[in-house]
Amino acid sequence: MHTHEIHIAGGREAVSEIRRELFVFSEVLDVLATSRADSLVVVFSGRPRPAEWNGRLRDAGYQLLRRPVRSSDDAIARRLVLALQARDEPLSGRSDAVSARRPRARRRRRTRAISELQHVSPAPAAGQPRPSGAG
Image 1 (spheres, one colour):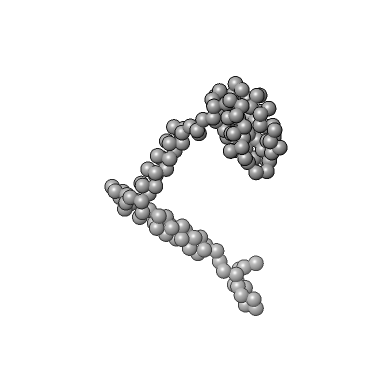
Image 2: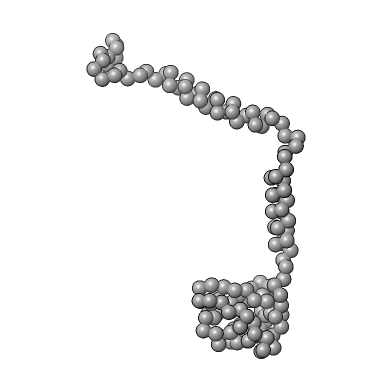
């Protein structure tokens, strides 16, 4: 099952009639209204045939619209471009203290691991006598 968005002037108010028009196509399973007044979703199985669906609706007297450009899509695209530009530009004003912290933290972890190993007494090798007092 797949979906395809179509844009028809007043489509939400005429969804029942539009559904009946598109049910002549065997692949169309349902036509659903969206939150936008001019946008409908065609639920279909198999291959979509939007050109034929649009032709049928145009012949029935419906005014088909181009897909509207949503401002939120534009805002997302703008933010993406800005983020990509910022990633490629060198960071100015950043101190080297941030980059110096990482190696120091790694050193601390390594030093801590070594100091913990010093408190663990090694087990004697096989065939070696145990040290006196061990029990």
